Image 1 (spheres, rainbow, N blue to C red):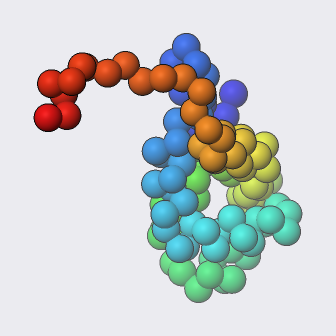
Image 2 (cartoon, rainbow, N blue to C red; image 1 turned 30 degrees about the vertical axis):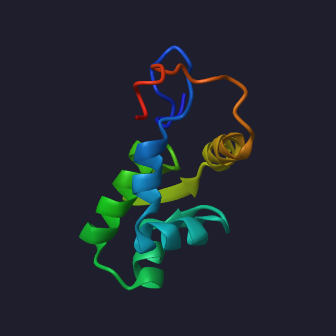
Length: 113
């Protein structure tokens, strides 16, 4: 199960960590590069013109929320985008646009006076 899903009864994505991970321009650039397929960390470092330690921090953040995964091949590490995690995020955003069907409880007339 991707890391974006909470352990709560509803099993809805934990959106706050996802949005926090996506709120960084470098991480959005990484996602954009990985849309083209799997890439070696050295290719990403070169394309983004960042130091490997900074790139590793960003990749770790994306990995923790389930947006990317890695695999090792010898001394190289390759990263892949989890499109299913993006699809889950897209579905949650679509649900936010849908009208709310349940009524919220009110505290009575004294509440808003």
